[in-house]
Length: 434
Image 1 (cartoon, helix red, strand yellow):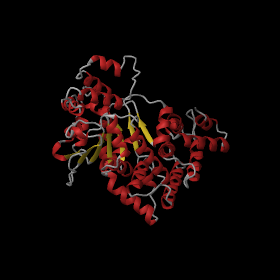
Image 2 (spheres, helix red, strand yellow; image 1 turned 90 degrees about the vertical axis):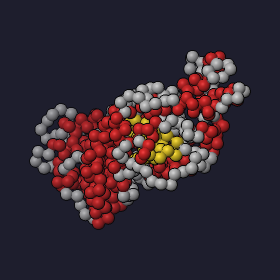
Image 3 (cartoon, rainbow, N blue to C red; image 1 turned 45 degrees about the vertical axis):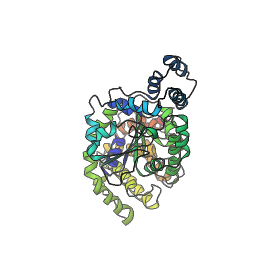
Image 4 (cartoon, rainbow, N blue to C red; image 1 turned 30 degrees about the vertical axis):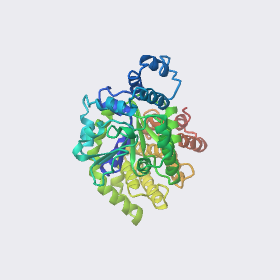
């Protein structure tokens, strides 16, 4: 899958950030790490009211009277009455969590690749997986290390190393959201400068949504592809995927466990490592010096994903006139390759390239829109649902199966163009899918 190659390319280019939440800690501890609510329920039992307070704050019907940070504020007050500190009690609970199960794929990745980890977790599990000799842990309230290291873990909500600075209660969240700390600034910077993979996290945190929304505006104004992925262990409905893409510029990789995600990612690393340096040099020659990729090079499907990743690596927007010229030449060459004898796989490649481009960029109104739509019309007019001489059955399958992965605004744009320009029934069948 092109998404894994893109993430692997970012990893070997030192441009990858993992954004981890509670689900990540649960995955690497065989589910022993508590959820946020589960943690607060455990703390309830340390107060004088015990189970009665737990029922009051977290009733069995699931209709909690307070948000979790407000419930934490209540617990803080209750514990103060018996000379206990909420942050210290939470730290003691979290510090007992250990890594369990088969996490070899995660350890292999973190122990060999440079990566930034931004986490809202208080635990130190990521550091243990990466190997503490090659990892720095950065926590509010403690000195910021100046030396370099392969892995840096930023605990934006604090960690058990400095319990008093952990963001737990509503008061803590208010200070965090309205402050301008090193960690909040670092979070925003990382989103703009790296490919970000969100693991074990939801978009419920208001501060996180505000920062990602800021990034979404930046990515649209600079016409760069979305570089944020949300990895979900469960299936995510297409309408929810469209919501993530539209509001936050997030692409979803669903129905996969954290460990399996890293096993798949590790399999893509060798090919990404092989092409990283050469692909950046090649794209510079094509973009800045007016050179062209050869037909032999563009016959290979994966080179397009390599090209898109290398454009981001050299700091260019896809809407840059030089980049548009290069992409136009690339697509035109791919179209020419479909006209060669026995070039059936080229039809499939062209379809997948166009689908991929429309899944990472909102193309409407950009200077590449015309080139893209021309190629799409050619692709769809040369495909057929059934196997038939002179038409690509595999191209049809690619458009048909991957149509939902395309950004919703692009689906609308493509549909309007295809309905206007062709009467080919198989093309219309794809674009008219709900």
